[in-house]
Every structure is written in C-alpha cells, then in structure tokens.
Length: 168
Image (cartoon, rainbow, N blue to C red; front, side):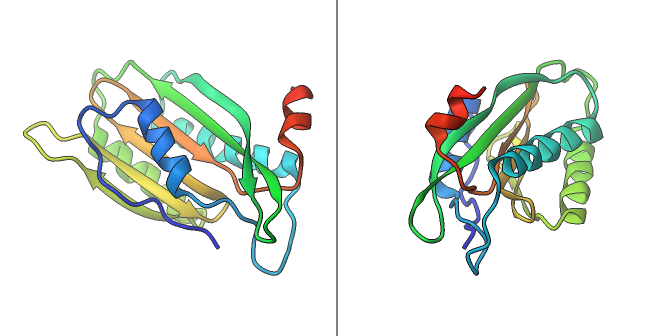
C-alpha cells in the first residue's frame, strides 16, 4: 500500500532534508495482488515523471541526484529496488511560483497522482506541492524563490540494488 507524504515545509529545509523526509515517509511496495515491477520500468517511470514536470515548468534544470537505486521493501516483505531522481533549477528570476505549482498540479493529476499543496509560515513563505500514487511512490515540487527542485521516488521493483548499481 502506498503512503502519502505528510508534513509542513520549513523555511530552512534544503533539498537533502526534503529528500530524507520524502524517503522516510514514502512507502515502497508493489501494487496489491503481488504484481511485480521490473527495475527498468520503475526507473523509466520516475525519470519520465520528473522530466515531464520540469518540461511543463520550463527553464534550465540540472541533475542533483540520480536516478539512483535504493533498497525498498516489497509488499511480500522482501527487498527490492526503487529509484530516486532529483532535478533542480537555480535561475528562478522572473518565475511565477503559484502558476508553476498549478501547472505541475494539473500534470500530476492527469497522471493519477494525488496532490497536496504546502506553504510554510512567515512573511515570505516557501511553497510547493507533493504527490503520491499513480506511476510514483512520491514526488515533490519545491517552488522556492532561490531554487526550484523536483524530487521523485519510483515504485518498489524487483531487483537487487547492488547489481543495479554495478550495472550503471
């Protein structure tokens, strides 16, 4: 069963901390009924979801991490592999975070991803959107004034992480 990411954004949270939170809260399991996911499909699905999101927002994005294989627990209790992919954009001058969040939200909803917007407190709040379900375990778009980032975590797939890492 997939779990949704919950919590609030904090003004001092960086990409690494957000990724840690996303990976800690997001479950990694195959679909009910024992249907398996091939590692190459899991990797492609998260790369596609993140790339389509960055294309929808526009601008120049760079790889912050991945797609990197990590250990996850499959629904049957065995180890599997999920992929984490993070892209970031530092040239946010002239952007409209509210409009970009709406764009990403519409895209994700069209793919069956359940979304939840967030906003930190303060006079200059940090904004973004999180998602779960559909083709991903979790995905998040941080539309911060200093930097945008999109972090995606794939479904848990069959496969040995050590083997997958050595094949890269």
